[in-house]
Image (cartoon, rainbow, N blue to C red; front, side):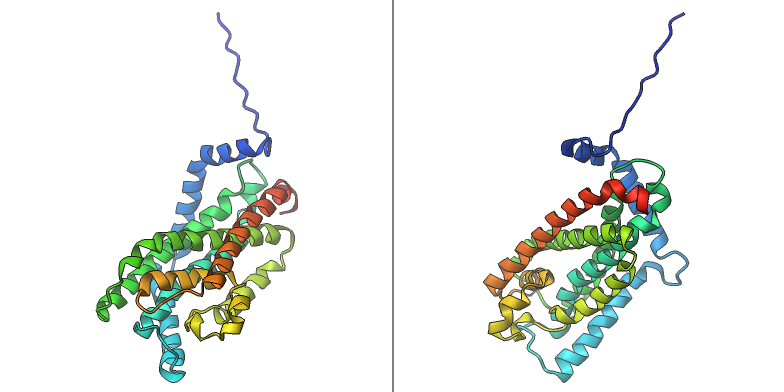
Length: 277
């Protein structure tokens, strides 16, 4: 009788950088599962379900339009003020949600992380995907606003996918930093909501970044979301919307620096997650 030798699979975490990225592809089904699970439970046992993805940014847009557009009378770059606000609200809401979801993603999956090996990068990435679903749903409001005000974007709208990728890079970079830091220092559970709340007011969401005095524009652009939001407005509003190019390139450069450094720090600390989580 023939005897068959059982094949033995040895998985060595972090064996090589190239192998790690191949593992990401091999574990893609786990990525799909985590993303789909998070989408299903996100609005579970809520009365209006995924409608929250529309109501929250819509109400924020209404408040900002009344305060900055009707009371403060700030300029709207030639577009209806609600569209000016919502063109910025989309990337900001995506970034803020992704940051909040990513920062807790590893801790909330501690049972899975401490038991089996898989590339941990899958966990925060799936959290960003869930926030991206909210982003896509919220986009319905922008389309509705354009139809209501009979606003037709010009050719610049074809560049919007590029700025969506930049927003994704910003969300991913920030999310990787905070998810890794939150494993060791649970203080970030309280720091991240503060950063999100504070960031809303120092980012040009309720107003155009052109109201910032020229001498402060470069310093203001150290906020990576300034470039992302200005890019969205440039692509959606067209017309009078324009970039402050030195600040724009500085912000975009900082976004990619945030992404690269986030991947580096996550990979550096990843091996210790199972021990300290």
